[in-house]
Structure formats: structure tokens, C-alpha cells
Length: 227
Image (tube, rainbow, N blue to C red; front, side):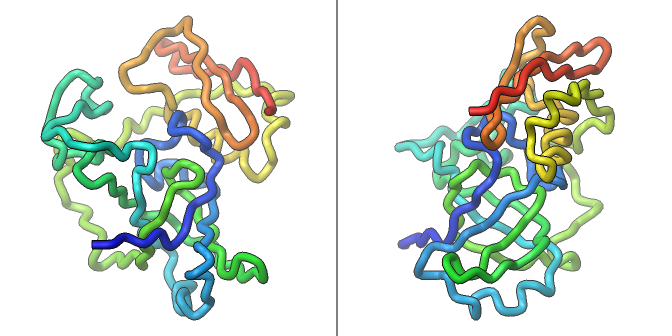
């Protein structure tokens, strides 16, 4: 079967580090979905504006590899315990396919790029190929009583973020809320808890460097470097 890339997403994450662990966890994160030239047709999204959320079906483009493993080590289990690949959302799958539900905030119609989808809450790296877009249907897609297995909802307790104002002002104003959500949820790998280590990840044109004190539950931004 031939897969066609219909669009690519543009987000503030040039690498996988710092990306929320699931879609919707950082509701203020902004991104755009730009269709490939063949699919820049207004009629193709006619009626989509009536839906508040959409599904994105996409490729783990940085995880494509030959071969596969029947078990993986999920970060939620500390990276130490193996479970079946089909019991996880790991990118290391026989087919490197991802699925994300995001909020559709606007469809912008442009002369150069055709319809551009403005979305929030995406957990995708910049440039990720999109294979398909479908409307989210609450009556069919939401199952509040579903069991969560080994991946229960994130702890309601979030980190307190110390982000000096002079550093925060280096971030574009319309991107600050999303970045703060990412930091509150602790962007460190689940198995790294070194209070002395300075962690870092790229966000847009900035490099965010921070430390975390787990005893106090406090994340402190140390530097924001603009590239």
C-alpha cells in the first residue's frame, strides 16, 4: 500500500526533547498544519471548521528503522521494564505511525499555502509528516470509563516554575503560555532525576536550560539562549 504525505506540521520543537508525552497535555501549545502542494485545495477541508478537534495520523519520521522488537521499555515505567509494543504508544513499531487528537482553533485560507490549519495541544516535532486528518467525534471517540493500564493520567501535582521575567521576555508573547505548560509537566526523561544537572531543549528559536529540585517540586529556568 502506498502512503501519501498530505501535510506537515510546524511546531516549536525542532527535536523530540521537551515535546509533551501525549497530545492535549499542553493545551496552549500552538502549531500549524500546512498541506503539501497537491492537497492545497479549499474544498478538501470544507466543513472541517464545524469541528472543535481533529485527529492527526502521522509518521514517527525520526524513528523509522528496519526490523522491529515485540517489546519496548516505556518511559512511564522508568525505562526499565519491558512490555509488548502493541500495549504502548512507543515510536518503535513495525509501522512508525502516530495518532494525536488536537484542537482546531482556526482554518486560515492563504494564497500561497492554501488552507492552513491552526491547532493547539499537538505533541509533534516540527516537520512531522501527516498522513491523514479526521474529525474528532465525542460520541464515538471518547470513552470516559476506559481502563488506563500502566499509563494512568499524569499526576495532578505539577512543578512550580521559576522563570525570571527578563528570560521569559525572550520568548514570543503568544508562545509563553504553551512553554510554561511544558515546563510545569517536567520535560525531563522520566528516569532522570539529577537535581544538579542542567537540562535543556529547543523551543522555537530558543534553547531553554533549567534545573529541577524534586524535593521542593520546583523547576528553575537558568538561561534562554536565542539562536
